[in-house]
Amino acid sequence: MTGRRRTPRTILQTFSRPVRATALYAGALAACASLTAGCGVIPGATGGSGDDPIKVMTWAPENTDATNKPGMPAMARAFGKWINSHGGINGRKLSILTCNDHNDSVGAAKCARWAASEDVVAVVGSYSQFGDSYLAPLESSGIPYIGGYGVTSEEFTGPMSYPVNGGQPALLAGLGRALAGTCGPVALVRPDSIAGDQLPALLDSGLKAGRHTAATDQLAAEDATEYSDQAAQALRSATKDVTRKGCVVPALGDRTDTFMDSFRRTRENYAAVRTATVLGSVDQTVINATGGASGPYEGAYITSWYPVASDARWDPMKKVINEEAFGDNRIDPADAGVQTTWIAYTVLRAVLEKIGGGEVSADTVRHTLDDGLEVSTGGLTPKLHWPYEGKLAGVGFPRLVNADVTLQVVKDGRLVAAKKTAGSGIDGITDMTDTLENADLD
Image (cartoon, rainbow, N blue to C red):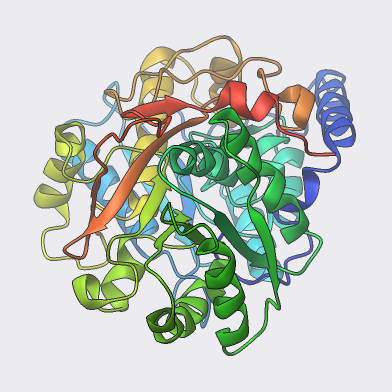
């Protein structure tokens, strides 16, 4: 995903340890069950009782030199204002606390400790690369983590994490399925690192499902300042079959832009190829910042978790933005972070409505989620619910409950729904669960 690759525990690093991940998950659940106070919940901590506002928190990095997601806390505040201006939930208002984790493990831990000190009932719709820093303080206080961005392994293993999308596993498997029917040779350019070692298996799981040969695995230094040699090698591999247009797939996180800059200069010497990548390496904000229609991503395939921003299913979110945050340029309805925050707060609203006039606390929010609540997101995702273990527990993702992906393409500088092509394997919203179940992640 995006962000600094030096993070010691990215989502990709846990894929080769599915048994360990599942065991840790089961152990944490057992530990929680043994605590009469609900896994460290402070007795009497309600997040607001009676007519007091219900406190929740959203965090994301802002004003840093790496990944920034200012639209996520801004979207959270807009949602809170909209709920409060329409009478609250069951007559109670929301108090939205926001925190900047500064893309730093210490900052992430500080945000989590602040959430605990404020007795928030949940952390909702947030982004941080440092799951090992923030989830432990949340779990010790019994605070559920609803709708993270899917950037860390802990979000798919932690018993108090309730993800709303399939993270990078679903995106890469979906990209492989999409490219299987449309590409000749596929060249994957990925980091030469332990984390990067897992990327080929995920992409190849989708290619294999579409009866395509495995991608060429092109390694690249994750801290390089230019990638001319790697671009040339990828282009040679992708153009070796003169009868079919090949595809180049850069998956270098925050270095994807650096690769694409080198790729744009190098590709003139080779036959035409198509480029493709996943949301997180590229999103609408990156496309805008790199020149839009005149930039290097024009024509690229990109897999996403959600429908394109122009889809009518996003109209309720846009209505809230227009009413409560009109003119706030931090909130781009096409940004996946903003979209994830909207979906996460949709989940929170459903939980609070289910609790009704009862006590609202981290404990009751968590138990409502664990007791089989199904949440409709208006078709943006399948109905969400979080069983004891999801179908993908066997491959190390016990909390991954939504493996849906969509295929998008950059056209005139905007991400739009890709037209279905014969054999692409992606038609509208497609579930990657079966594909991931058969992935060779050993």
